[in-house]
Image (cartoon, rainbow, N blue to C red; front, side, top):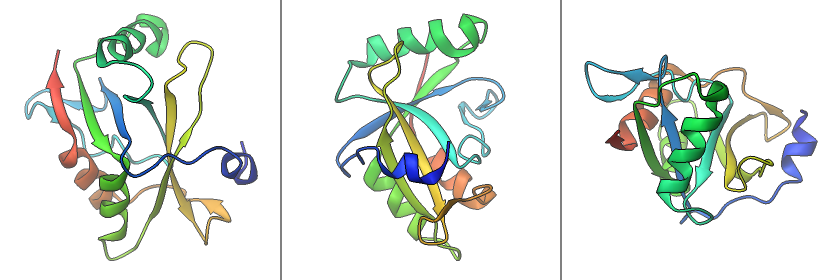
Length: 143
């Protein structure tokens, strides 16, 4: 998908809270938190708490991620505002947005997008330090 298509989607407000599934390889069992690589890709799937309650989101995660073959260890909640704050706080500023991206199996589906070049492109990767800060900012609940 190209940037023009992503930019056509509705952006989420800063007050929105997003839920991300924590599972291998994005789960650090020893530290009981998301790994530093969870936000490394420029497009990260999440679900919106404003659309579904957490119980339904967890059910979707359990049944839909890799066809239900992946054990969901935990989930993390983070606000769009916090994502943007972390993106703007580093040596290299990362322009994050969260967009609506409903899919047939999950009307609450959203994507966290890391833009580059004044939103002309997606970043190739999110710096490890930024990804780690986002992971640490998650409010984690172990299942």
